[in-house]
Length: 159
Image (cartoon, rainbow, N blue to C red; front, top):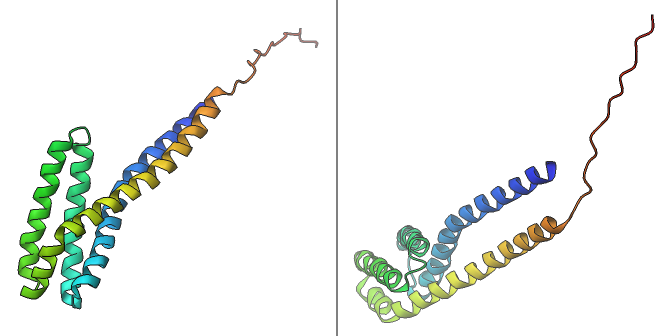
């Protein structure tokens, strides 16, 4: 029984951890993309801070769409393209004309860079989950001897 409780607790912990990692994934994706954009577009501190906010908001939307439409790639593509268009509009007001021109010509490269990073994170998270599942399967194959019921013998009370 204890083994069952420990296994159940492990499964719940893995589920919670994987759910928490999806939020962390959005933050990691936003930070990674923002760092690349800041370097290549040579943004100042104000622009960098605003860009990080924009990318975090958009990365959270993308992760949400990826989870929601994981079985429907065409709908997922539409949603992600919509998020990218929203980012284009927001960046147009934030960046200078020269910076936006540079961004606009390189936006496909930025988008593919973000998607490659997302796939890399998925693979890393998948490896961790697979090793945990493999450990659970080996634990499930173990057999334990059946416990014998205790026999209580009654004795007569001596006075």
